[in-house]
Length: 520
Image (cartoon, helix red, strand yellow):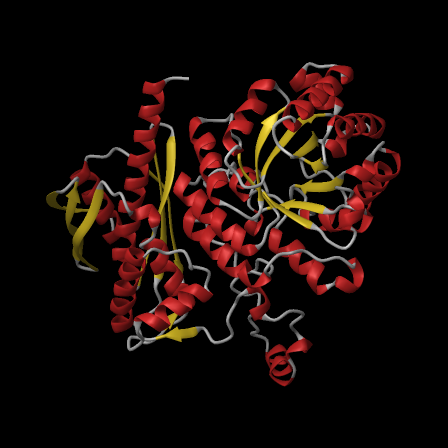
């Protein structure tokens, strides 16, 4: 397909499941990747890069499962430009409705000399061989020149021309280390458009990192220069300072169509739900001042701003909250609401694929919360669904009850009852504070030596009765996992998050043991 067909349309290539997950603290289980993949499909992304199949058995299985369940977007796996990686990626996406493969090799002299130990001629030969091998098996092949923005332009022209001749229908120009400046990146795209042989047969893609805070700006500059695919992640997560933020690029193109003159196929009303789902899965909160999806993105505190917005929203809002899926009326349900209203609101929030069992469990939690809170918000519902979701089906540990005593004149003490593999166990203990007492007692009951790496609490909504969203990160035997939970009682939420992390840790350790048993 020629690039000409995309003159008024920019593809969105989402790499949250691959490049995003590579960032420390953002690891996901296979089931979590599938769940996020389904949300990316609802969001309307054109390509899902589901992982790096050759990296591990777990990554291979994740790509394979996402590929088998996603129907509309292209699902691709990443592969280095060698036969083993290519074959592994092909096997991972073979069940996809629309399979694709993304292969890459570095092109900068820095990488050739210090990392690859290859000549330019050897790099071109490897790129051609990889693309040809991939095209024999999948119709969609993207070729990336890693570290393109620090590469010699003449060499880029040579390698891209060869890759297109070999069958690549997308060529990617990565700013791998976030080195580019917008006008310089645009000039590079223009040079490639005018000099690469066969460029009319391929779509030019931008993959920019945020080391200098310019990823979105560089990507948008690339669009002006002729880029027709932007590679990005939800919330801008990724290695080091992160990747191009999907929501920022999409809403910039939509809000300033007068400047860019192009559109995406993203269902922007699904942006906020996608952002929330990612934060719930990873346990990493979005900064309140984050563009588009931050808590303050549509908040106005200054009197002048409030006055202007009340008179005319356009005075201080260039897009509506509803356009990205943030409701204006955040009070959506109460304790008297029934199952039908509950189910409908979850559907509106993007949870259309829950099973009857998951819906019933979530509804029970909702009714319990409704009795404890005056107001139940969308964020509360999202937290409930996440905590009762598919990743909680198989649990080695289950918190049955918790009692905590603490105060200025009391030693913090916790008593817990936990079901372990169907057997009920209980114990009590003390700590430096109520949360410390809870964690130490749970650890003693289950017999774990996991180290607490991080503990964070965020209020989901406003008010003294707000649910607290707790995130816990544990590490053991080289494995790091996140656990999370939400409840108006912070201590109870902390205990649930800790137990959730222990379950994930147990699952990861079990998979690692199985992998060692099976062998390569």
